[in-house]
Image (cartoon, rainbow, N blue to C red; front, side, top):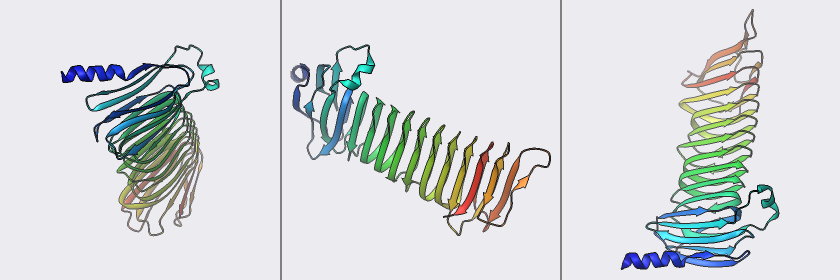
Length: 316
């Protein structure tokens, strides 16, 4: 009988919808359950409240065909289906969905969209957010956090947990993260990060990096054509690995740094050392240049490799 009642409830929460129809629906949810949101076009804002319910309100877009809102065990599903359209170029001129979604604070939220901007706030159970064309803006998230966009910027603030951020054509701006390890990747975009995390990995092809790090233990950064600038307090026994093809690497450390340096350029380039009196060495018969030295006992390690770029070392 309970299964029958649940089945009837699921059917009753699936609607054929009219364009620009307003919705205001609520379903009971687990306090720490899953909320899966599948979206196509428009914008969505996901926030938390103190109720064990999921609420969806707002307006559906021009091409909405069906709105699905159901619970399956511990998971609540929010899905907007649209009429078929083979010409994706028309999406930008059409009115998309405008959704406000309330979830329990300890929910695990999964959100995916094709052409939509999304905002996510205060979710504590973990978040997985992916868009094709659209920006991602998140604040005060906790747990396992995955943010990815193909064509869109990603802005993140006050994150705690296991963080991975990826975009192809877009910039990443991350502030005040607290985690064991942060990971950032772009292809054509800049990476700007301010973090308390002790481990960080960042990669870009055609973009610049601006990293403000506190007490870092492990830093791995790679760029092909962009500039890498990192300011840090490198911990005892910590390690920095940086590499570029043609870009510039600028590393700034605390005044009392204890570290060993191994800096290599392979096809020209230059090394500017403002940390000590040690000078760059040149290959007598080739283009290679290098600089190796230790400061204050050399407990940490700094390794930098570039093909033809410039390396600058200094105190912050």
